[in-house]
Amino acid sequence: MLNSVIVVDDEASIRTAIEQWLSLSGFEVQLFSRAEECLAQLPKDFPGVVLSDVRMPGISGLELLAQVQQLDPDLPVILLTGHGDVPMAVEAMRDGAYDFLEKPFSPDTLLSSLRRALDKRRLVLENRHLHQQADSRAKLDATLLGVSRALQTLRRQVLELAALPVNVLIRGETGSGKELIARCLHDFGPRAGKPFVALNCAAIPEPLFEAELFGHESGAFTGAQGKRIGKLEYADGGTLFLDEIESMPLAQQVKLLRVLQEQKLERLGSNQSIKVDLRIIAATKPDLLDEARAGRFREDLAYRLTVAELRLPPLRERREDIPLLYEHFAQAAAERLGRSVTPLGGTQLSRLLSHDWPGNVRELANVAERQLLGLNDPAPELIEPGQSLAAQQEAFEAQCLRAALTRHKGEIKAVLLELQLPRRTLNEKMQRHGLTREMFIGGN
Image 1: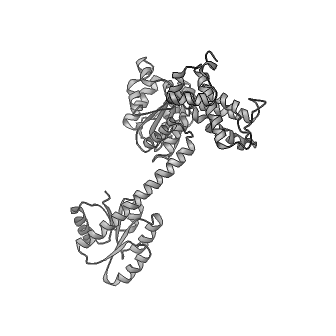
Image 2: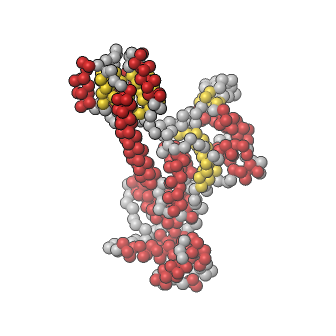
Image 3: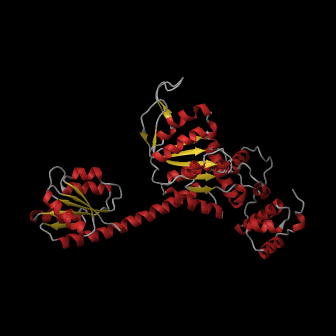
């Protein structure tokens, strides 16, 4: 429940009296003697009300109202006026003030006005939050493309975790989009305006790893010319993404763990501790706890990094997303290369759906670009113009069934599990499309 009140008045006795009244009624009170101090410390989306005297040295209450409205036109401002200021206060209400109280006023009058203003503020902030959530969902839907249940679940998890101040471990195969997920966790969270720093742990030679992570002072080692800010320090306030974290040398794992525990680091060649505030998002292919049991990774660091874990499904587990992803990558390549996109034919789509995609989304993007350049299939089969949506849907359904039956060599149980269909429904669809189990037994 909102219960915050900022009180701005140059008279100490009035500030003290108001603070006593409001504190006894359960309000959280901040006191300022000058409007300049209030404006300097007013947080964005302040969850409360501003209560200000009109006549003050420096910035007046009316000027404070005008500046607050520029920052947040929906933040309620209640003005405290002397008898001679009532016409002025009435005019101020036309200009956006929530209410005015003529001195001397009773505690009950003050409390009544504040409670009404706080109710209004609560509704405004709830409405803003709902709009922000809807905007974030729409932007995330446009970033993490897919219609599969797995992608819907992943998008929900990303939005939930983005808002939480916890380290996240992303598990996924090569090319499955781990850095994109890390970037979304940063961009849709409260650290979005701060740095996002990515470091591939497998790409750095071990002798250079510590300097890359922690930075160094001039002369810290041979070749260290000038001071260098490391990735940890550069990510202060934001997010550090450590890709292929399983490749981090054990010696650096110990030092990283200390940084996570103490929120401090020391550059190479320095004894000065530097405070850092950062979120770690790590990515790995293997299970870090398995790596720890094998002696290749520190168990305590694995637990510290795996406060929350996201698993990225490989592309072969979400085949229904392939057409949409292919279209996206083809369109992006077409815009970049100044070409037009040719729709896929049934045979080509069937090939896409039946492929196992060991390189995942990265491989699909490459295939889409090569197709656009005419390097994959010299005789593309086009979708016939004028086909109805129902006809195209039927063709696509038949292609999905053929692809699944081909992959599993006619093994019906495996097809049922992959396509998540009841046996009777699968039988009906196979019969409608002229497909039999025997056509695929022993196929490649």
